[in-house]
Structure formats: C-alpha cells, structure tokens
Image (cartoon, rainbow, N blue to C red; front, top):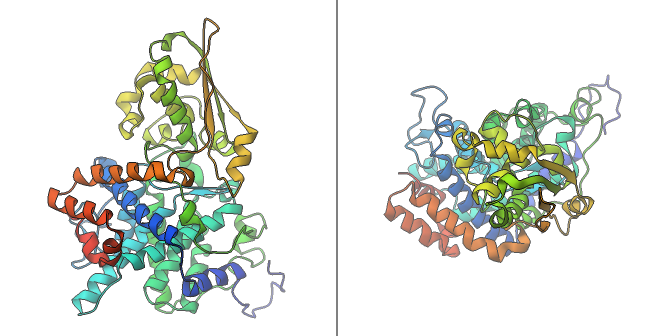
Length: 482
C-alpha cells in the first residue's frame, strides 16, 4: 500500500504487482513441455468452442463490425465467418465466440474464470499484425509464439485468481482477462517495459464490470460476451500505450483513489506463487458438458444415476446435492429461470436434465427443453449443502478438486447410492482420459462448420505438434475461414 502524503504530486514508482507482470512478460522463458502441450490442446479446444457457438443466433449477432460496413480489408479475421476487422473489434468477436456456450477452459480458486478467454485478444492481434507483416514482405508470429503468449496470459490471470476474490466485492472475473490480455497485447505490439506498465495501469483504472449479470435475479447473456468486451478493451489500452499514453504508477495503491481503496476495501493483492507456467499445466477443460464448472462433477454423478431413476421419476421424494462452498454460493438457485444464461448457471437444473434425459448439451438450456415440467419438479425436490471436504480439496493447491455428490431418495424409503465424483474428466489428473475426448470435440465441431479438405488439414495438424507449432498463425487461422 502507498502511505505517502496524499497531497504530494511526486510521481511514485509503479506498484509492485504491475512491475512483476511487466518483468514476467518481458523476461520469463517458458521451458515446460507440459505447458506447451496443454496450450496446444487449449487452442484447439477454444476454436472448437467457437465453432459450436456459431449455431446460436444470439452469438452470431455479436460478431462483425461495431457498425455496419466498418470492416477492414487485410484486418484480423473472425473464425467461421468472412469478417475482416480492426483488431479490437475482432478481439471482441473471437472472445465472444469462444466464451458463448460456457464450454472453454476454466480456472477455479478464490476467483474463478476462463483463461482461454484471452485468446480473443491474442488471436485477433496476431492475425492483424501477421497479415500486415506479410503484406510488407516480412513474417508474423508462428503458432508456437502465440502459445508462448497464451501460457503467460493464463499465468497472469490464474495466479491473480488464487488468492484474490474479486467476486467477494461484486466484480466480475473478466477484470483478469482485461489485465492479462492488456499486458500481452502491449508486448505483441512491440511495447517495452514502460508501455506495458502504462497499459496495465490503465486496465486497473477501468475498475471492473459488476457480476450482476451472472446472478439471480438478473442473470443474462452478457456473461457470454463479457470476456469479449474485456479482450476488446485490452487491445485499446495496448494500442494507446505503444503510442506513448502516460501511465499511472500508483493506480492500485493511491490512497482514496486507487483500486485497492475503491474496489478492494483497502486490501492489497495477495499471491500464492511467482509467475511461471503452473496455470496452463493445471487448467481445467470442459469436455463433456457445456456447464458452469462447479457443476461438472454433479452432472457426471447425475448421469451415473440416470439408469436407476429414469423409470421412477414420479416416485422421487427428495434429492440431496453436496457441493463446494463456491458452487453453493454461485449456482445454487431456486425459483423460475428466465433464460438460457439463467439455466446454465443453476446447479439444480444441470442435475435435473441428466437425471431425466441421460444427457446435458447446449440445446438443453433452451426454452423447448426447459418447458418440460419434470425439470422444475425435480429442482423443487433438491437440497444443496456444502461439503467441507469438497471445499478443502477445492482450495488445496496440490489438488484443485471440484467435487460433488448426488443421492436420490424415493417415496417408499429406498434410495440410490450417494454417487461422488471429486475431479471432472477435464482435470489434470484425468488428462489421459480427457485428451482423446477433447480431440473428438474439436473434430466434430470443425467438421460441422468447415469444408472437409480444411477440416482434414486441421485434424492432421492437431495430430502433429511440431508441424502445428511451426505454422504461421495467419496460415493456421486462414484454415478456419469457410
């Protein structure tokens, strides 16, 4: 904290957290093969999520120029569309595609979030800069170089999330997307230390979006484009910084007016570990179900119970759900659910659907399925309690579990077993099981959107890490144009 005389106009040094990000972005060298391997998977998975989102008109409506006709020939391309845009608006479009279905990677700690949201910024800016460089006879970034930036963006967002609960003060986790993307975007634009620091300070001065749109009674679709909005803002800050925009060294610690006092109730940031490649190595993938991650294992429990209850739905007396504290606080929701966004953030809804139908897919959050009266009937029979063991394992840095348990009781006094799942298939401890499923998710998604020859090429690249790494990012992204 900065306890200097608040009347003094003497410019201080940049706050330590901002300096540490700048030093990491400029100087740290990634040497983890596991981080790069996971980053490749993350890239493919994110582009699969973008493809799957394209069947949703509400997502497509957010893509393209901010105003009709404001396209940029030779600009950044938006996958699965013909759009060429300025990098800020392309970042918004790509970020919205990746995030729309709540199906991209996840990080859970004191704060939650989705580190691959940063790809909206990284891919848009890499394509824009690469196309400009190639038009001038030069070269842009390779896929490997973009993965390096992605590992660092994951690390910044995830390490801040370990100990700093922005949700506790009502701020949305996309504040960390803006932070990480701003730092990396400034570096991609050629910014050195002063520019990176300036851009980061601007990101903090923006403060943060309220979490209102993620919670009852106001849950709505903004949660699907909020990350894209953060990606867009990051590009703006980076572009301004490399043009020489002045920074604000005590944007965090300034008494009264700084982020700590305004937004964090006077509390400075805390950190569990130095920046490295920990977050990418441990990131969680959503493989089987487009569901808020705290519910992933609950969905798996419900699917295991489906054969035992599908013919006895009208005999169910009660359903007990045990979850982590974070899950109980975020997605334990009763009463009417107004829309898709309300439903995919309701633990009870995400358990009821697989109990009834033996599945959970994006379409199950739509109005047609939600109209089935059995869903709300089962929701009304559910009780949600915190399990202290699940909460402890959730916060343990060596575990990072996301456990849930489900048990169904019938009106004749009988009950199913209490099915418990500690880690979802997308967890690091289930990587061997999950990777083939992730690759199948990727292939299915892109074949539904792209000509077969392009899909064949992309699938071959996915199976050849060295060749994928060596690809110019412009050529790689060109394969996602229909």
